[in-house]
Length: 121
Image (cartoon, rainbow, N blue to C red; front, side):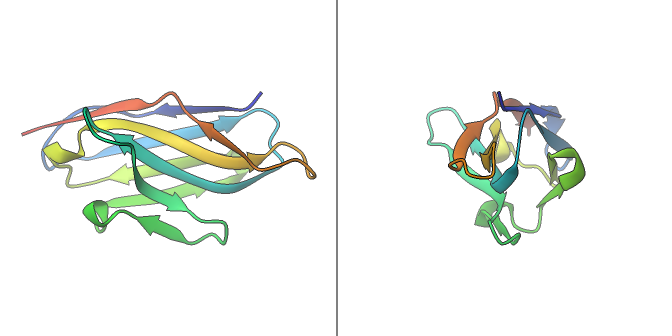
């Protein structure tokens, strides 16, 4: 069974920084796409940053220049460095991965349980 476990959320003042981690565990053959999403109260879940299938990165316009996505393939772990945080960054942040558990298996979508990020003004 594949699990995605996020950590690193918390309460920070505006202008501060946090680093989120997402560790993927279980039987994983390959990871096609991996990224971070967030959902604020009363809003839809939105993409924050992601690695695409060709290894390039995508960022939401609202976080460009402030957030950096990275990963350690050997550890199946992804990170999100968040700098210059703003109150509007307050949300539950979710890790997402589309991966295969065997070489001939279908790509399957997985979500972590989420980690709360709260930015105070």
